[in-house]
Length: 481
Ligand SMILES: [Zn+2]
Ligand SMILES: [Zn+2]
Image (cartoon, rainbow, N blue to C red):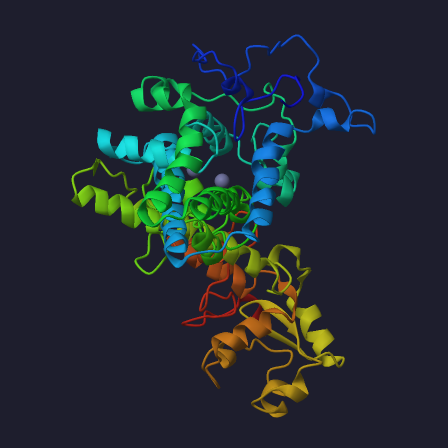
């Protein structure tokens, strides 16, 4: 028996199930707690870990079930020949028990993303128990807290505490039950299958985790020990590690196509490992959708299974977000990425920060050797650019000290969008009463606020063809007269 410190919601196996007394269900929405739990007592997690008390911080029961038993299984495998029938059965049972977690615990009970008929519920509760990851009730409570308080201190497996913490650490170290965010599980308390599985959890785990897989290979082809080691212990280890990856890898590896304000991510590798739970950025955005992968070519065997059960009449009321809403989220995230990219580029000094020049000052400076050119009321310094001008030096020189608006906009050469963008990086001033002001007034009159659209960070958005120097029908600059 591990240390008698009060523990939070039980983990792989809760100590309360080790007593001969059937546990009573908590009457409220509180986490499942030890009967010995005393909220007034200082919890071990509130005391710093030292050389003399570190072992009290460790949840030894979970260390045994998650690390100790699998290690023992690995050692025993050296002396246990693996028969191909047992291997095939272990893989098949891996998928069943994995689906018990992904399609059962996760998508059916934690998220209610579809409804299941009684036989399917019993199947999922049984094979889910065989994955040895706690009862449906405990698992779903923590998982709802994980969604509600993602990445915060109330998230039971926050990746912000480190990748290893989100994968294993939260189970092998004791957690303070007061720390985990509260969630409503009243619906689960009314589900007879959930209540039965919770009350009989230890029996379910031992039977479905070890005895049943051993019996299949023992009665089927006489391989009792192989069934116990491979389809039992080692299969539990792989299914546990795979599903733990949803808490760790899926919050660490991949893209964030829907929202990047929290840690969940989408990645094929995580999907391959977790029976399709790897599209986790989508899942955290649309948790009540029975799918994790929305594209036909993405790997989501959990979704395929739910669809198959639907066609067999075992599942119904599959919930799905409208693609319009999904695309809105995707576009907003794209927009955000675009804004970040745009902000890194040089779009020229913002107009409002440019000094205002009198027309005569502009002409004077141009005469004194600065290659200044006015286009649409904005002064550009082309001194360093003249020799690189693709149209030759002469064309620029002819515009120096003059209003080159018409010349630049087709009078002599209709410049490209790229040329307008490049020109904007050379601007150094605005001519008082210049053409830019006229363009702005015209845009206002035509009700097109072309010049002043800004992104969330306040950066002006310059669309192709909307540069301030781009003038369709050049108006005569006031100062040029
Ligand atoms: Zn998550
Ligand atoms: Zn979830």
